[in-house]
Length: 414
Image (tube, rainbow, N blue to C red):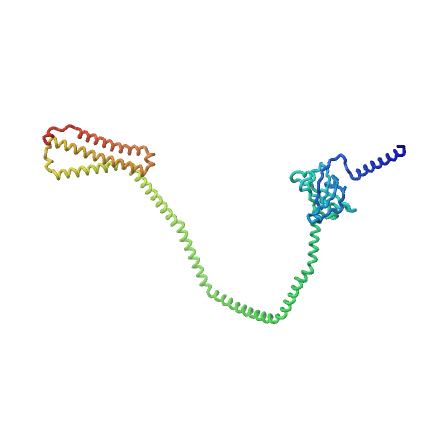
């Protein structure tokens, strides 16, 4: 290869390298920066007008990426459904699912850029190739309003469209609502003019009747005034009597409050004290009865024994009165001892039964006192033990009589 060919090749290579450097500078590409791809989806209504491959992707107005590809998305019927814009973002930029990205048109020219007005903060950062839904904007109007108000541009346009529709509906509403209302108002005014004559006559008559009524009312008031003037002394006397009666009633009420009510209260207090005293007396009697119930039971037992002995003595005297002056022999004495032992045993058994019954009644009626009052419990136990001792003594005497040898002369009697 000769010298001119080498120069030509070197010149071409230098031009290519220079062109590449200029392209890198113009496109603001950093060959050493790492990139993360994402997909921004646009609705058909919003479109991607002005966006092209290589367009800037900004974050708060700062270039942090580029548009790499724009792909239309078709539905199952073959119609255009949405548009996907593939972007490469600086990997240091963390994007979240609630990020907001707008298409911003330049004020001069027909190019557009993507601007992330919010990177989001919900959940975890989106992984590579994640789908981001673009926020609707209004192109140049969004550029004029600025990134902060860009999200409100569509609302402004929708409100303007709704207001335009309202303005368009005014003529129709005027014909449908206002014109019939005016016609009705004209009819009402016409009817009012027609009926005015009749109303004037009726109103004049009514005013005349009202004037006559006022004259009669004035005359009645004059009569009432005369009656009041003629009966003024009687009215004064009646009012004075009412004042006196009211004063008397107040005195009576005062006397009732100051004297009668204290007496009633005193009587009630005395009655309450008497009831309390009676209750205490009943409690004392109940306590005494419970305490002396063993003594009462013993007294009743003694009375029962005495009565039985008197009954037996009277029966014996009636049956054999001659025995009063008769001297018994040894056999009769033995029989009498046996009879007396048997009778004592029977009486002791009755006393023991009465003591057991008294113990049962005491425990049933006042078991708490029997358990808590030591003296009362000891008295009851002493009564029962005494009855038991008498029973054992009578039993021993009966056994002694039954087991004693036959007295002299008993065989002869037999």
